Length: 356
Image (tube, rainbow, N blue to C red):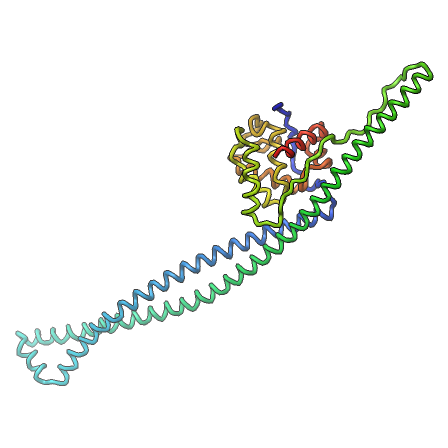
């Protein structure tokens, strides 16, 4: 494949090859998708965090419930001993007789009293901790219910934004189709006009027997090739979209430095609402699919940018196409992207896109 000189483009604020109304719809839908997706991811992460906290709390409650009977038994034993001592004089007398001295007796009584107090205190502490954990359980349940509501709301918003983008993408595809038809009609009209003019000039030369002093004015350049409809199904979910397009792009990029990045291209196309063939095709025109990058990982002649990985670069380029050049290849996009030689660039991109 012939190498093309990079066009060294930057991404202007807006230069779509579709109507301003459709551009606004796609931009707004894309913004809503990005915001809704971020909110949904945050809600899912928060719910997972609360689920883990709830599981940890329940485990601690179960551990305390296992400890309480043992502590209760120890306390009951101490209480029983002291109770018998108070009720039966003989037990107290026996304790006195068993003691070597009054000090030893008092030590024994003090030990039993302290033993009881320690166990009672342990029971009170366990009970207080259990109450606290029960309160935590109630708080976590409330927070989890709220997080579930937020997740449901974010999921609903994301679905609505995706539906809006699907409709805008269908409209963009239809406008791109009409533009291709108009370009084809313009090309045929230009050819017919040139042929008619040439015939008229030939007739005039024959009649007047003189050559024209100036060359015939060349017709306005129009693209001789146009990109076919991509056939992208924007009504599917992202996983299905990527599953459909990643293998096709991988086959197209096979054997090049960009080999194996089909999933990244397809994922970025879905995220930013761009024809999934466009960025890979530009990489072929500008750098032979990454073989002749003038900056690290810059396969698209994209300004003076460089990136640390193909994944980072692909996402940046597709995002730039979405925000600066529109849904798919168009005459206006070609004139913005490569103004010095836009027709050749357009034709090359269209050919590459049609081969994916």
